[in-house]
Image: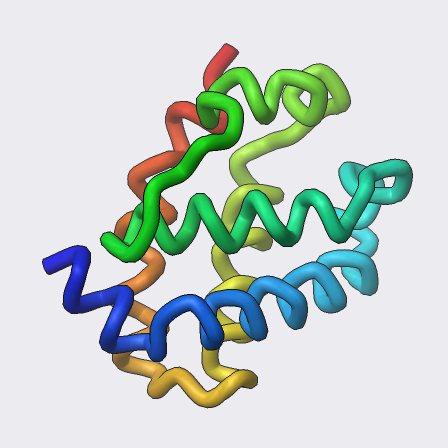
Length: 121
């Protein structure tokens, strides 16, 4: 199923475009931008593309373990509502780059599965 999701959304090119659009959306969102104002967005985008591609079955992820990668944002008050905003913006970004809404919805499952690892201390 995961390999099909990667191919279903258009592979790395689509995930890269959606990730770029996602970070544009995040930086305009008052509820999320605080977590990224001092971040190296280009580096984050690169790792995010790799991570999401891995979740959907397309590549190997070589970045930090997901829980450790989010320690600083948890310390700065990351809450479930902000994780929900992340999901909302990523789904919208997928659709904005041409992924059919029903396929964008399918991508949210693997992302949602990381909620506990991202949010719990």
